[in-house]
Amino acid sequence: MSAPTGTRQYLDGTALLAMTVLALVWGYNWVVMKIALRYAAPFDFAALRTLGASLCLLLTLLLVRPREFWPRYPRATLLLGLLQTVCFVGLVNLALVRGDAGKSSVLVYSMPFWVAMLAPMVLRERSQRAHWPVIAIAIAGLLLILSPWEKAPDLVSSLLALGAGFFWALSVLVAKKIPLKNTWEILSLTGWQMLMGSVVLIVIALLVPARPIQWTWQFVIALLYNIGPSNALAWFLWLFIVARLPVSISSLNSLAIPIIGVLAAWLQLGERPSPLESTGMLLVFIALALLALAARRLSRVRNI
Image (cartoon, rainbow, N blue to C red; front, side):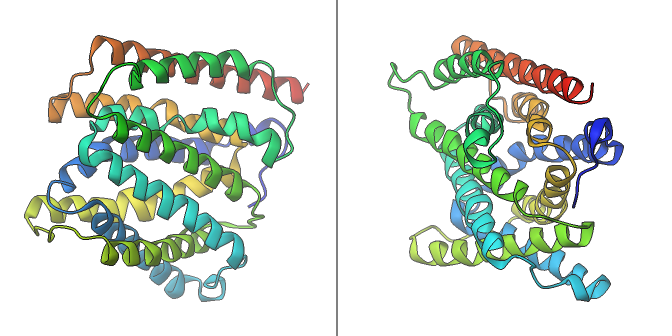
């Protein structure tokens, strides 16, 4: 979908509303995923949620807009599916097996900093000097959260969450280069990339030994939440946002999501970050806010 030019590109009301809904849905989903993984292995859960969501999206598209059903850019769609569905979703689930939900959410949402570093190379955008002090603050915060100088029992899960943020950033940059003309093409891209990725996740789930799924009511509710709001709806909203807003703005949706994730995990799961982790999280949030301000100033300069 072609983004509007000028100031309107940065003040798209529909896209901003989508960002708000997405923040609430994805923020709370960190608690939901943590609960779901008590009853299922990570790749089993990842395969079920992505397959279910992709089928919902594609069935809707087939019934409502059949001429837009098939993917317009199959190679780019497959690449997006590998990055966004296989690598991102798979690593998130692995990280949550032993890692805290709130802490993992902050590490995963390092994505905007990866985007800021990679965008000049991938999108040929001019590197912004204002980003580098902000990235330095974020790195300091991430180091405090990871605390590599300590033998933290969840260091591996923390690194997996950080890796998920990196692959998510790559998927954002790939999605930004796909020319989408309308909402139906976004729906098609979302459904097909998820379906292609879910096939790979199913193969991995079959190959990796795991405990059988416990079909409790808690797991069923968590799975339905991930199939519907958190996957089918949320990934459509995410690609809609990426298509309608500049990458520097769309990636900043992460400012609210980890805050919601940390608070929800604290209230519902009793996860309390250590003083060092809390300081690191604060630095990451400050860096995200500064990145948002820098992007806003840049948008004003470009429209003068």
